[in-house]
Length: 245
Figure 1 (cartoon, helix red, strand yellow):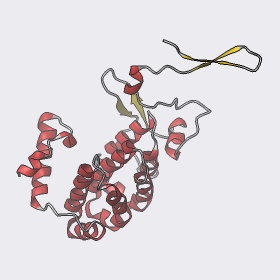
Figure 2 (cartoon, helix red, strand yellow):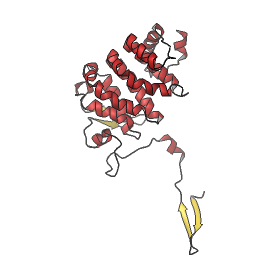
Figure 3 (cartoon, rainbow, N blue to C red):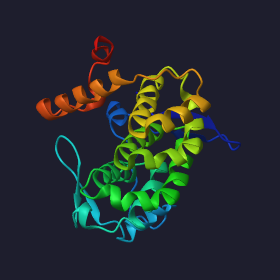
Figure 4 (cartoon, one colour):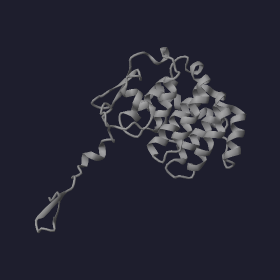
């Protein structure tokens, strides 16, 4: 197999232009950056903070999957400014930053007393979340959706005051084939956690939205059963189960 082409220069000598040869395994590996390379330009404040040791967790590489190890349990940490920095990091697109941000926010939003510490920070959390939701990268948007679901579960109706700034980003992608199911699910979750005020806000921005009401409440209960009994990611549950309820 030839690794490049040969060209002839003005003096008649052959010059070879080498091309990098791609390997099948390249598709399996995410875009990765060395966090401690001084030449790397930081996309957000999160990556800079991580390099400087300001993020109290680290990535643990496993043979099957990676995990996040906290130096201090999330429930014992002050969320200001850590969670704000994490939310800004949703715009990170390379490993390990994107992995740490996604899983770090999940751990913080599901920790004990997370609601008490998160609600006061909402005015500072929503702008970076909204900015990240505008990114064209699909993986980034999916991480934003997952974070928004968790945020809604954590703060409940306190999120209603900020829905007007978030819903336009959901509305823009609602017709995208690969994203409409996850967005519809998020809208239903926002309604369930936010009540009638959330429903009114959603209908104002997305008139075609149809409330699921008690059916969705039952579906959430079904998710909890699957997650607990079978240790299954709720998003992997067959959505036909929802229609059967």
